Image (cartoon, rainbow, N blue to C red):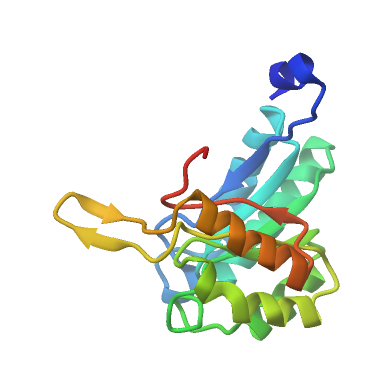
Length: 194
């Protein structure tokens, strides 16, 4: 990122990604302190590597999300570095997170933890994210982000195919920025540099 910035003067930032893993504390797969401490170690490594921000992403369980956010905060304190902390939730086509939490519950649980940005990524394309973003735009006191998949995946014999091309994703994100005031946009599964 620094070398690209040096070439053309446009600043780039590195978001240290902290994904969901495979163990959900709400379902008893792992203890809360164990996962919190694991996220702290993850965040300490990302900060040591020079991450400009930490992104807790694709979260499916509010207790797991809280563990990640608090682990990241503990890491910043331990390392003596303060960077923006972003939180991106994954909502299913059912309209809830995997373990059933609605967008209002997620916002109420996470905003008081001092995150700097909240939003959505993965699981669905932009069409399925609109109502959640509308809710966040009306009720969140912090900036919003959105990184959808390139549409809902279609399973083929060659694996998952994502039907939304670059123009469709750009049009959706342009609408989200205009309607909901997003501060950060990007893409998740099925997206490409284009």
